[in-house]
Amino acid sequence: MRIGLVGKPNVGKSTFFSAATLAKVDIANYPFCTIDANVGVAFIHASAPCPCFELRERLQAEGRMEPIDEKDPRQGSICQPRTGSCIGFRRYVPCHLVDVAGLVPGASEGRGRGNAFLSDLANCTSLIQVIDASASTDIEGNPIEAAGDVLASMNEEISFLTDELDSWICSILEDGWSRGTRRVQAEGEKGLAGFLLEKLSGIGATHQMIHSTIEDLRNDDIDLSNLWQWDNTMITEIAKRLRPYIFPINIAANKADLAIDEPWNDIESTALVIPTMADMELALRRADASGLITYESGECDFSISAEKSLNEAQKKALHSMHQRLTSSQGTGISQLLEQIVFESLQMVVVYPVQDEGQWVDGDGRILPDALIVKNGINAKQLAYQVHTDLGDGFIKGIDGRSKRTIGAEHELENNAIVKIHSR
Ligand SMILES: Nc1nc2c(ncn2[C@@H]2O[C@H](COP(=O)(O)OP(=O)(O)OP(=O)(O)O)[C@@H](O)[C@H]2O)c(=O)[nH]1
Ligand SMILES: [Mg+2]
Image (tube, rainbow, N blue to C red; front, side, top):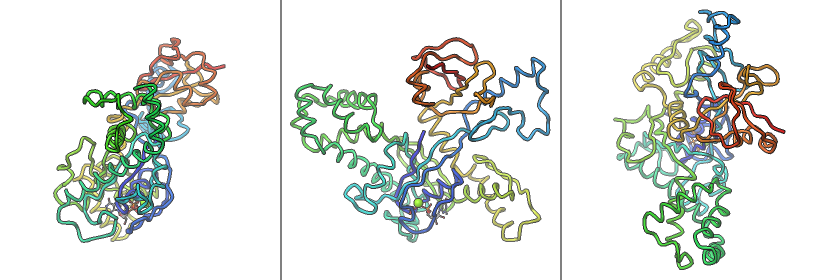
């Protein structure tokens, strides 16, 4: 699971990235601060309680474990995550983020940093476009006096990104199009699907996405039989229709702390639009990491742990952040990530184990891994996600709850616990 952060320069992509991953990256108030992409891991809350809850109940019922101690810092959780954590059965699961260089209009023709960064997005499941909800930067990311029409400025950002992505996909298709049309002449629609897959699988297109796009074209009565007579407008049409499948985009209306009158409410888009305050999230998470405050991502509140060690300026800053945080219902960062993963993309979390009875790995670690996977994934596909060898040698799976054998094609549900038998 990988999400790309994209948008014009100087909107807060690296700040968002750093706030979500706690990785140290360059952040500055000028365009093209980031040149090479940053890759990191954000931990997001699984939508269902960690199965260590059920395990604990079972052990307690069997008299093998004491009830939860009030002072237990893990509030009852007994799993041992290899990455991430779990407190009070709220499990944090890893999700990769990629922070790329800023994009300016004309990038697909080589302007700004050009197309170089687009390849960084190639294996992203989904994108977050970070836009400037304060309109304090122009379309190229240069600081300006806040623009008069904030809504127009945000809409301009949104439409230019989709235009650039369309042009990029288009340019991939144009290269070798005549060969493609010959294939369509010979093989019909099957040839079209084959050509599109061959050209676009490198940027994440799947058979299913291409199938859906061809279906959409057919539903709109677009004649697919004489493709070789098509001009550039039809190639653009295919690119436009494929893009939302390859790169679903949702929006972080960032610098919400500087915005006037919640302008994001007026954005007309089918995407999720969530106001975010990336720099506040970063400040709060750093303050939490250094022990000054106790703050959990996604919460609308925090408490000061080290009041005495704070100077007046720090106290004042924390006080005003607190007011802002509670009135805005949180910084929006983890809310956005969780909504994208679990609601828009409908991903699920599964727990591979080596022992289906004890729910442990070979070293006895309880529920060590939690993976975010596509809804509808089957047992064999999961085996491949864990390790290629496990997929190649797949024999059967075992459901950790019912202990029933599950076949290669068996679709896994959210929160499934699975043991995989492999040669
Ligand atoms: N007020 C406010 N400023 C922010 C927020 N998020 C980021 N910034 C500031 O915006 C500026 C740009 O942040 P970056 O994270 O470097 O932006 P970027 O999009 O990665 O920029 P490039 O790498 O140049 O494309 C910095 O001065 C940040 O401190 C926010 O939520 N509110
Ligand atoms: Mg950056």
